[in-house]
Amino acid sequence: MQHAFPNDAVALPGLAAIMVGFLAFFVALMAARHRAAKAGTAPLSQRASITWLWIVVQGIGIGIVGFGPVQVELDPLSAMAIVEAVVVLALMLGAVWLFDASSYAMGKNWALVARTRADHTLVQSGPFAVVRNPIYVALFGFMIAMAIAFGHTRNLIVGIPLYALGTWMRVAHEERLLRAQFGAAYDDYAARVKRFVPGVF
Image 1: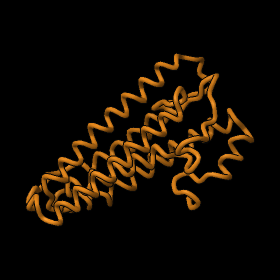
Image 2 (image 1 turned 30 degrees about the vertical axis):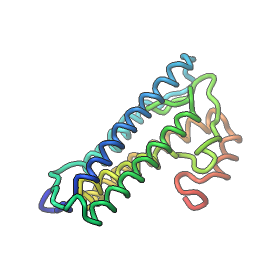
Image 3 (image 1 turned 60 degrees about the vertical axis):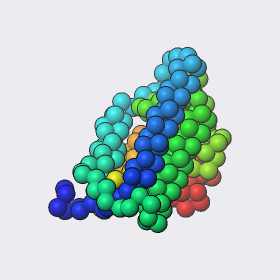
Image 4 (image 1 turned 120 degrees about the vertical axis):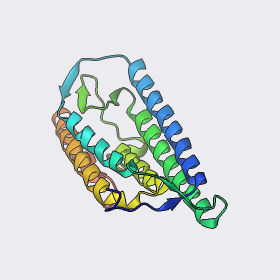
C-alpha cells in the first residue's frame, strides 16, 4: 500500500486537530448510546442483521484511509500546516455536530444495525429534514478529515469505493424496513428529501 499510495507530509497541528475530533466523536457516540438506552426497550418490529456485514465494509474503507505511516515533516507554524489543521478541525467538528444532531433527532430509534421498533417513528426533523442519511454523510466527512490529517489522501482511491459500497447496501436494507413500516409516509418523505446531498442525490 505504501508504494502504491505514497503519503503526504503533515504537521503536528493537523494531528492535534484530528485527535480532538476523535475525542469529540467518541463523546457524541456515547451520548447517542445513552439516549437510546434511556428511552427503554420496545419489541422489535423488524431487523436486518445482514447490515453488520456492510458496517464492516464501511469500517474497512475508513480503516484503509487511516492505514500507513504518518510523515510529520511540515513546519508546524507554516501556512500549509495551519490550513491543514483548520480544514481537519472544521471537517471533524462538522462531522461530530452532524452525527450528534442526527442521533439526537433519532432518539430511541438510533441503532447500529438496521431495525425498527414497535414504537418506531419516522424521523423527519433536524438534519433528516435536509438529507435522509446524515450520519453516513458525517462519517464520510470523518474519513476525509482523517485522510488529510494523516497524509493518506491517496488511500481514498480505495477507501471511498469501499465506504460507498457499505453505505449503499446499508441504506438499501434500511429503506426496505422503513417502507415496510411506514408505507406511503416514507415514500412521500423520500420524494421530498434526497439521500445524501440536499436537492441533488
